[in-house]
View 1 (cartoon, rainbow, N blue to C red):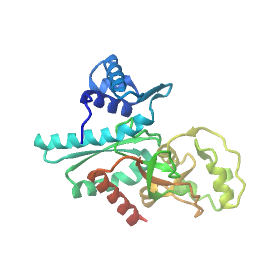
View 2 (view 1 turned 120 degrees about the horizontal axis):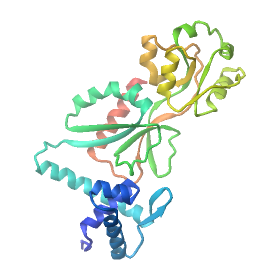
View 3 (view 1 turned 90 degrees about the vertical axis):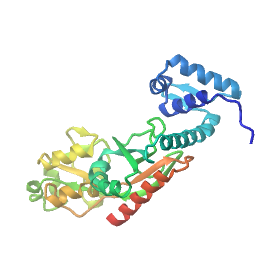
Length: 291
């Protein structure tokens, strides 16, 4: 096959620019100036005769041609990096970068990771946490575990763990809750998803009392407040199984609200590496055993 006479450096700059989402961040990663990044992109577009990137208020957006080119380059550069690591005598250590929503990381994944590390010592797993807002390409991740419906544009999503919501609180407060109606006299801790308490009360067959007080964007913060006796939090029960087992949190009512699932996600056009496939298989086996 004829190989196009395109400078490798320009292709590398394009791949980094797409991942980082801006010329400025690409320049930082490549340790060059922003002008140098812009020049390489312009040169590549001129050689190919088409635009590859569009500047928008939200950052760089690949054109159709850019979206077609990026995954090919990403996989190629990753393959070259692995080969060079092996030649350099790094004992086949493969880095796998995974973004994980914090609640899942602390409540489910981290207690299980030592077993994965023992079973796969040649995979250097690097976890970064987030609040369920993640850009896999821009953040340079291989995979991401996120919560939701599983429907994200351009994203493949493999289901892992269901996360129904139920009221959780400290044991002392739980002892005073005999029926869902008693929750009207308890402080109800709220998340930024304002429909959760009304939906839970509807499932329990009781009207939802007026909701007041501060709003939190972290289930971890809500769980900590609930354990301290500050109120009742509506939380994904499987993510707080350890606290329930330890007795620091109590589920006073059996009614649970289906709210979504945690998914392993990656760009739909990305070919999985052996390390990504290995981690995905392990995650799904752990999720199956845990259910």
